[in-house]
Amino acid sequence: MLSEGRRFIQSDPHLIIYPGMTIVLNVIVFNLLGDSLRDILDPRFTRKRREWRKLKQWQSIE
Image (cartoon, rainbow, N blue to C red):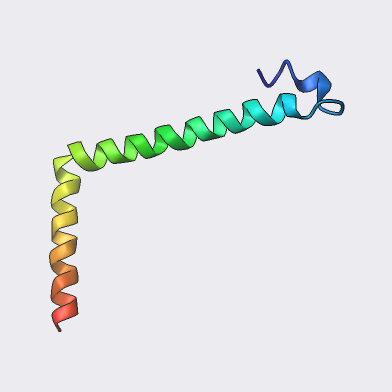
C-alpha cells in the first residue's frame, strides 16, 4: 500500500498517511494484546508480580 502511494506523495499525501497510520495502529494493538496475554498466561510473570506487590506493601508499612 505504501509503495504504491510513493509516486503521489507531493500531490496526494493522504495516500501515504492513512495506510501508514493503519499499520502503526495495528502494531500498537498487537503489541498490547501480546503483553496482556503474557500477563495472563505466564505463571512466572504472575509470581514475580505477586512478590513485587508484597514487597511494595512491606515498604509502605515501614
